[in-house]
Image (cartoon, rainbow, N blue to C red; front, side):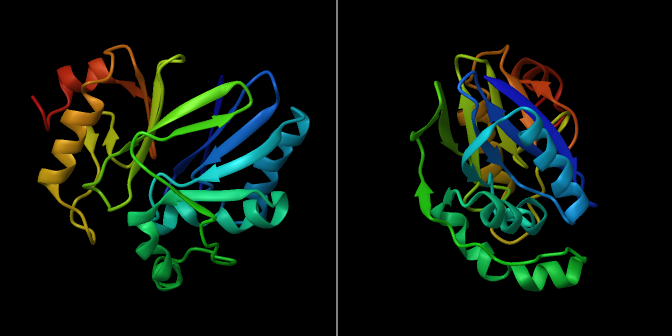
Length: 211
């Protein structure tokens, strides 16, 4: 599996494009805030002759969902989230106006994913891990074969997600990280929703929230 990371919008959200030798691909956290950002993303897909088949959000905060409209309208593919995050979508327009995001339209999910479900595309698969605490509905996508996990805003290099927003809880988040992420193999690469990649080993050893 190949993983391409793009960084979009004023909040510097990492958007992930995952694909394999079949050219099928999935998109996680479309975060484009304008036509120029989407054009850069779209050009990579076209230049590499990729075929988008699904897209997802790790969670439904406005900075991670602002590009959903672009994907849905251009590729007409199905959209999935965890059901517990759906409530955030109903308030997305208000948050977009307050925070200055260019939300062109609101897309409703076509289906819900849950803990333990396996997402498949091409010859590849990702395990869904439910990790609340930063926000209800937060999910991670884990590839045991390729040794990486996409974690949204749950865990960062040397830090963790905010817990002062609606449905946030430090105790719940810490429990999610310790029981769901720190139990993965130590050499698993961690791709967060913002900032640099890290590893499970590095966060267990050096993250100040757990040392």
